[in-house]
Length: 351
Ligand SMILES: [Zn+2]
Ligand SMILES: [Zn+2]
Ligand SMILES: [Zn+2]
Image 1: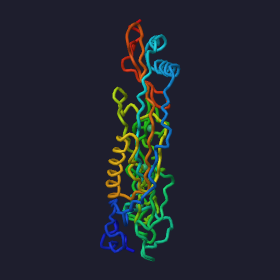
Image 2: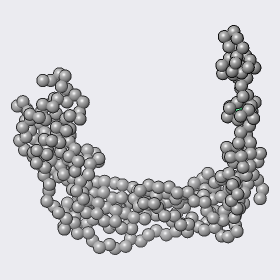
Image 3: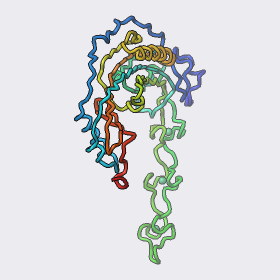
Image 4: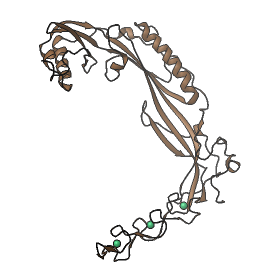
């Protein structure tokens, strides 16, 4: 084979299934056919446990004290001495849709030739979606690069004209450089420089005085293996919908906490969760399932989808301290707390 780089499309355009592949291109390869939804058994969230776990005053106060002591400068007094007047349950739902996709793209790539056989066209190359690739774990992001069989050929390295060597960048090919102790003068504070024996030069360390180094492209091998590389990407796309309760917390406050799982289903393509007791959960499910299935079948293949409904415990705690009325929220399995009207946020000034 000639030493031509990059391979010209006229040379390699004839690889069946790889006609559009270019060097460094990274062209997306559409999956051969879209998946058809399969009718699943309809979920029955009615069987879930709907009893709402409202925390006790003791648990609320403990969480509140822990929160206050974690805040720089907050006075502990309102948390310790405040009197709880009422606990208001403001529990809410979080609907989550996860869509796990696989996408494939190809590009011409090369690596130092280390004795691999040139198998270009010894057999028909498998098409991008015929190549076996298994994600290590569902619903996690991962990338794998695979050399497509029967596309490899051996080329002379274009980086070093097949010499395997490049001039050393440290010394510009000289093999030596100015002595760092005497800055090239040969003497150091009036006496001879012992570091360079008064020559003013010292040997270049990276190239061991040779002036040349191994070519970075071929790592000194002089030849490159050129091949079509298949890049397989698995992505998990997660979208939440939180039902907002009036007087409750904002959706973003709840992003870091967990709730009680009421419902979970995994399928190739999920069906919207119709008939859920809270209609806004059903609406969110219908909207997100439609959006995801339209969006992700265009650029990738949907392998799995998972939808989850959690009950997020939220309790609004009303309390009084020094004749003022205040409130805080305790939420999530973690008993996280927010208190935007905390009355003593600086212990140095108040009290
Ligand atoms: Zn050098
Ligand atoms: Zn010197
Ligand atoms: Zn080279």
